[in-house]
Length: 201
Image (cartoon, rainbow, N blue to C red; front, side, top):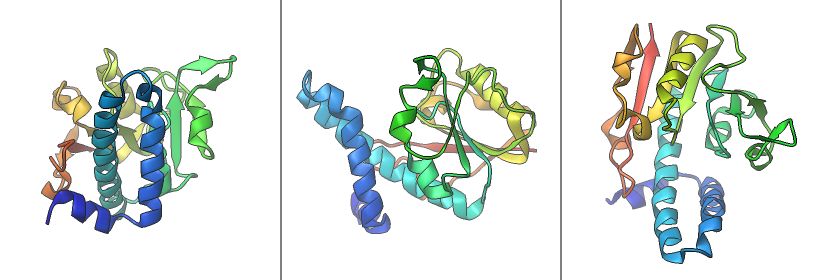
């Protein structure tokens, strides 16, 4: 059976509708300028979001977590749909009007904090899990190091290949072990995304 069929049969219809609406919203600014690219981006992003949803559900069933940091979350609502609004803290640093970010209104309910991910306003060892999705910048290494600081013993750093294809994380995550992710969640669909899990020992 093709990956697309497996995904569509596994994800609840109401969640699929939410994912589709979120993807449509994310490519909307591109539609007027470049409809052809927007169509390709939408197909790719939809495939990625479906794979992300299945991966996060596997993660939840294997590593239940009550305090999760979604670093640089943008307006991605999937983790809070899966783990719960009270479990996920979203961070962003792009502010306007002095005290809000352009992403937070799109996130709806949930816990949000304006924060620079290289200097987080959180104490040491306070999170069970830190998520990094679709985030690669010049400061990514420093963000990962800071994530290790706020992560509790046995906590997890989760990322996708926007990071792992650019950085050898094992060079920076001292005292971490990489956890094997089942093949069913790797290189799937047209996005061919890989997910990585690192445990703090």
